[in-house]
Amino acid sequence: MNTLLLVGNYPSDVGYAWWLMESFWVKLADHYHKYINVVLAYPKVKKLPQSIVCAPIQVVEQDFIGKKLKDIILQCRFIQRYKVKAIYFSDQETWHWRYALYRLYGVHLIIIHDHTPGIRTPIRWAKYLLKRFIHLLPLLSADGAIGATEFVRKRLIKVNGVSPTRCYTAPNGLPLSEHLTETIDVYKLFQIPPERKILVMVARAHRYKGIQFVLKCLAYLSPSYREKLHFLFIGDGPDLKIFVENAKNMAIEDHCTFAGRCNNVQSLLGGCYIAIHPSQGEVGYSLSILEYMRAGLPVIVPDNPSVCGATVHEVSGLIYPEGNVQSASEMIKRLIEDECLRNFLGKQAKILVQNYSLETTHQALLDAFKKIDRKKVLCQTKKIS
Image 1 (cartoon, rainbow, N blue to C red):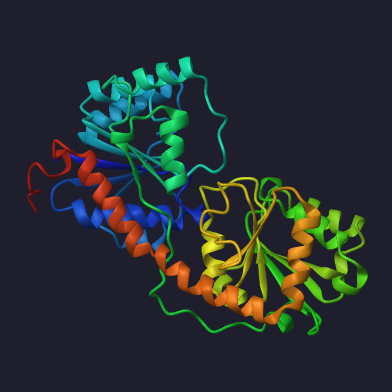
Image 2 (cartoon, helix red, strand yellow):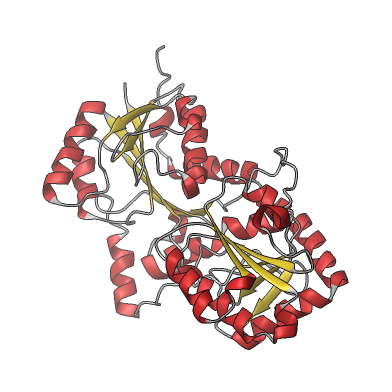
């Protein structure tokens, strides 16, 4: 029986920010397993996410990320053995010479889902034409590309050179309909003075996410305003110890809590007042920003188009010029003092986040697959039980 291959970029127990990708795999498997075998290949199979265990997916260990010749030979053998007719990649190239080999071994459909963050440097006209030409070559290029947001879809066209007729959007979303757990007393849990308003950020502890910028804002505020504020950072990562040391060097460590990784983020957000997300790059917005909005928090973000796409200035949050500590600090002060503004922005954020439901995301993904799969590779014959 022919196979739809889903490709994981990391070992099966990485999880964390991969829950959204896992939900895509499950949705595709639920939709297509009656017609075609669905196989999920991880580079290393360890503990499996429960959603994958319960889905009609066969899990195997095979690295499809390596691009050395020996890796690609093993991948082609795998394709031949499992009769792979379609491949769904995340964050891979929209064209590559190995795709030609895949097709020679029986693959008819290659779909790329781009979740990579950040702004790309615009390419020169000659290079753009060359990329457009390469993407017209059926052996080398993917059959379709899906952007995690509209920002990414446009980037696929303008920077990657993918034809607009092959680009689609499945905008990232959250499961808004699920029951949210009760709010946790964040003050008691982290021993934060009750007179302070909590400024929260949820992200991977990496310099790219802009945590140092928040620390600079705290240091910039006058002591009187600083006494009214406490920064709560939720997340782990390679630079966490550096941020703790930075806070000490700036003499603001008493106004910062680095909570590390927490599994009850939504419950914690409900006990905060303001959110900030000064990342240097996302995919138009981040899931964290949607989580802030779902919790009814006003969010402060930079005017970087890869970050602020879900935020409406003075409606659901405040947008400052990227890198401007003074401007961001003034917005923090404003939200500390103005309870009415804080409540208004939070209520509007809670309304606007309804536009980013996971149900809508899943439907957009299936619609994109149907449009890309013009030859009905995934639904040619019904699978025999």
